[in-house]
Image 1 (cartoon, rainbow, N blue to C red):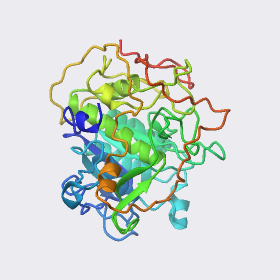
Image 2 (image 1 turned 45 degrees about the vertical axis):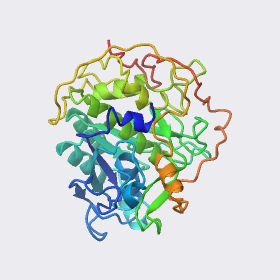
Image 3 (image 1 turned 180 degrees about the vertical axis):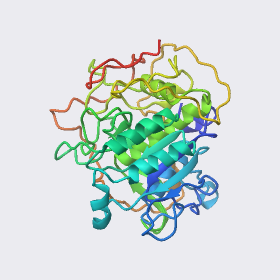
Image 4 (image 1 turned 90 degrees about the vertical axis):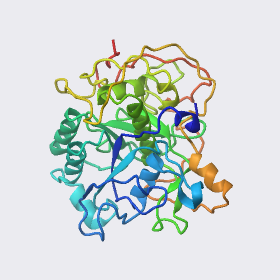
Amino acid sequence: MHAEEMWKVSTGKGVTVAVIDTGVDSTNPDLVGRVVPGLDLAPRSPGDERTDYDGHGTGMAGLIAGTGAYGGGRGGFGLAPGAEIMPIRIPDINDANSLGELATKDNPVFAKAIRHAADHHAQVINVSQELIEGSSELTAAVKYAMGKGSLIFASVGEGGDVGSTLNYPSATPGVVGVGAVNKEIFATATSQKGEQVDVSAPGVDMVHACGTKMSKTGFCKTAGTGDATALASASAALIWAKHPNWTNNQVLRVLVNTSGGPTDGSKRNYAIGYGVVRPRIALPKPGNPGPAGKYPLPDFPVPEVITYPSPKASGAAAQTAAEESDSDASLGIGIGVGAAVLIGAGVAIPLVRRRQLLASPSPPPPHVPSPPQSPQYTPWPAPNHPGGGTPSSGQ
């Protein structure tokens, strides 16, 4: 089931995805009508949260919910074009003055952004940004958002080819850390590896709306774990829109249990986590979503957080899993949907290198176990987590 087929089942309509980033340009043709009010936490930059001072946030929003409206339908499509985007603008982490603030353990910016998203009913929270330090305040905000019913995805960051770095909030308990894979379904060389990698998604050659600050055409071709995180968030939006009565725990459980895991016999590895998200499998064959109030991963070291469906929810029934085999290694989550449309229309796409380097198609270093996905495999049970414990199986 590729993007066009998935959209017959779900477009993400009814789901709000908060994008904690550089702002989102609400006038971008591919995002007109998709951007709802958010919060501006970067007062030193012109405009507000619906103004992008950089272009990065618009790019992530485009990957999530781009409608392809540019040029009469020749623009870039996001994976969940029916979803709404709630922009929460934070200071520029690349700006020297801002970096000093954001690196401070007690800095409230990310925590405030997460709490605002949860308080304003964002089911999915996307953080395609990284901090070098965590904090008790950030941990508390994540726990708060989980209790409000939100599901948080964050990029694990780049630089994996030169060293191992633990970034936040992807390493914060309760946040789903997302790594990137290339077209060969290997973890990209630059994607960080480690216990913080929970799932992965494509993260190379992503073509999407990004705004004129990053490109004269308004479209960019990028790579990195931030892009992969946007696709993971969009995948969750597709599942949640199909099953609006599910909780954040159930959506995550299905997303993990239907992922394409490592083919070396392990349930999980440090390169791709539990596997590469496959919404095209999760939509027709979600399996048992499991307990509504039990977090499915064992990395949250506190008593269970009971969560509830979004106020937007309306009835949906749980389904039972059926065995399947996947003969298509393309993942079917819309890799290059925007690229195919734009290149076909003869639009020149600039290559953007911001906060990430384009990953080579070569596999990661030999010491990192990351075999490619096999063309055929069946769903596997929720895997063990290196942090200890066993994930909820949904029984």
